[in-house]
Image (cartoon, rainbow, N blue to C red; front, side, top):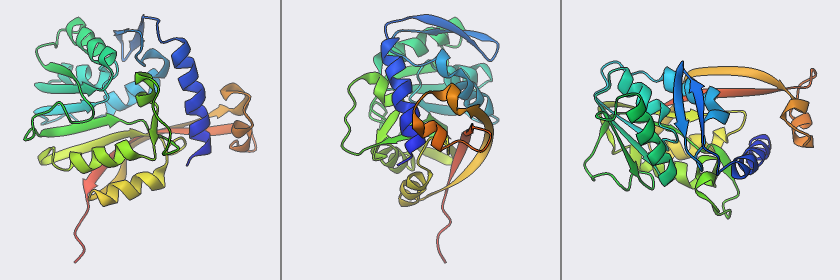
Length: 251
């Protein structure tokens, strides 16, 4: 389990809970976005914008965004020409936010948002050219239970959701379809991800990545930050768009 990621996630989650009733608007990728209460959005817009703008969309006829939040990746894909976009989230407030943003940017005819526990709301035979999940890559203890819809945006106890997602995603890709995860090696559990990906028949590679340093004191007062800082008191953070490709069979 990643100590740095868990500490950052716990503090970010506490802040999100304190702000959960607040509705707001934020600017991202030179556009304005709606964020209803109970949904993550503007506070984490760097990673959201980075992933949404980094996904390959050429030749994509259908896209699925899992855990859509404010629906940024879905709306951007529709604006860039993807004709059929499906956005899923277990949080009803996130689904409603996505619908509002799709209407705001005049792509409601291309974006369908549904409340869903992973793939459950989809027809059994439904497949996609591109699947993307900005996953809750902070691994929590396996016995931890989510106490709010917001918790699903941050934590995956024991990486059980990642395991289920990747197992089911294998049958949700169209021929030649591509699968992407928004991740962070600094905050997530990379070895656990590779383990569950391999069990589902996927290999993990970095499609695009950005890294930066943040001073330990800026992150907070927890001694965990100082313990993970370099000699210049910088904690190195990354946001990594991962592509999961089908593993080559052993010959």
